[in-house]
Length: 534
Image (cartoon, rainbow, N blue to C red; front, side, top):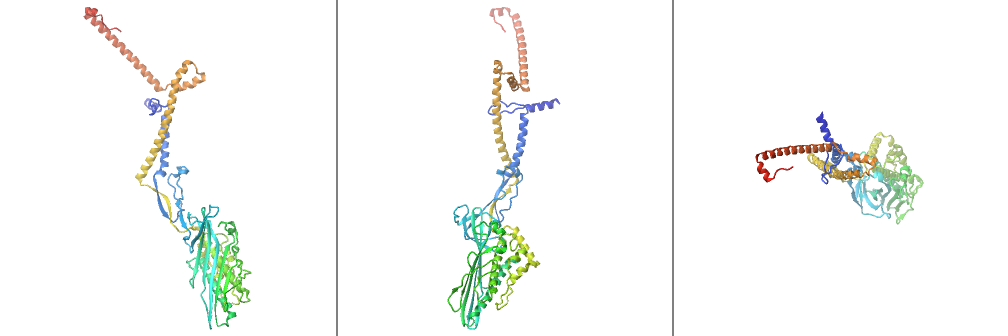
C-alpha cells in the first residue's frame, strides 16, 4: 500500500524540464498526468482527422455522370467544412458554337447556333463556353419552330403528276446557364419519301411522323382541288411553297422556366409573330404570291391557305393539321428536354385530347382522307397499349437527367495501399504532434520562468515588510515548498550533520595521535615547536 502511494505521489509530482530554461521546471502538481491525458486524446483525434486527409489519394477519372455524388470518406465528418472534399467536382466541357450535341436517349440532335456571355451587360457573343452538365430540364425550353414545305403538280397533255412533297422542320431551344445563354437548333430535312427517324416504342415520335403524313395527304388533295380551274389547259407546272414560324407565347427573351410557360394552357402556347407565307406559282402565268395569311393557335378564323373553292372547311382542315404538327413538335421537344409539366401534351391523357385539334375531311376533296394520326391521337386515351408506352416514356424522360452525352474528368478518392496509408497517417500525425509539443514547451517554459522570477523576488519583499496581509496570503501559496523540496532540504541537513560528526571523529583521532607522538619524542617535539592546532 505504501509503495503504491509512493508511486502515485511520484507520478503526480514529476515535472518536465524545457530546453530554453532546463533549470526552471514548471510548477504545480498533477500537471504531468493532465498533459499526458491531453496529448493521448489529441493523438487519437489527429489520427481520425488524418485518415481521410492522408490515407487516400485523388485520381482523375472519366465519367458520363459527373453529378453522381462521391461517397463520403471514413471519418470525414470529423473534418472542418473547409477541409472536406467537395462531393461533386469535375472539369466542365468547353463547347464551341457550331458543335452538335445530343441528349441521352433522345431522337433529336441539337446544333449550337450562338452563345452570349450572360454576365456581360451587352450580351457579348462568345465562340466557346463552359458547360457544367446543367440539366436541360432546368435551364432550357423551346422558343420557336419553323415548318417549311414544298410540293409540285405537273400536267402534260392528259398526264397529271403530283410530285412527292418535301418537308423541313426546325426548332430553337434557348438555354440559360450561370455563365452563358446559348441557343440550340434542331433541323430535320425529309426529302422525297424519307420518313422521320423513328425510335421504337415512342408514341411521341410516331405521332410527329403521322402529323407530317396528314399534311402530305391534305396537301396532295388540295393540289388536286386547286388544279380544277385549269384542268382544261393542256400543260402547266404548279409549285406550292409553305413557310411558317411560330414562337412560344411565354418567350420574349425570358428565362426558360418563366412562370408564363408553366401556367399557359397547351392550346394557347404557340403564337405567330408574323404572317405565314403560302406561295403558289400558278399554271399559265408568272409566279404570284398570295396575300400572307395568319395562323391561329385555336384553329379558327384562318386565312393561311388561299381559297380555290368556296369550301371554308378546306382551309380549316389545313390549319388544324399545321397546328397539330406544331403542338406535337413543341411538346415532343419539351418531353425530350425533360421539361415535363402538367399542361404538357404527353403528361396526361386529358391534355393530349385538348391539344390535338380534330381534323375533318373537306367535301371538296376528291379522295376521302381519314387523317388517322389526329383521329388516333385524340382516341389514344382509351388505348391501353398506347397509354402504357406513353406513361413509360414520360417516366423515362422525367427520371433521366436530360444532359448531353459527354465525358467529364472528375477527381475521385482511392485508398492507398495499406502500408502506404498507415505510414502517411503516422507521418502526418507525428508532424502535427511535434508542432503542438513545440508550442506547448515554449509556452510552459515561459510560464516556468515567470514563476521562478516571482519566487526570487518574494524574500526581499518579505524582509521589507511591504506585503499586506492579503498579499502575503497570495504570495504564501506561491512560495510554499513542495514535498520534494522539503525532502531534499532534510537530506541536505542530514548530510551536513553526518559530515560534522565525521569531522569531529577525525579530529579526535588526530588529537590522540598527537599525544602518542609527544610521549615518544618529547625532546624533539619541544625543540621543533610544531604540532597540530585546531
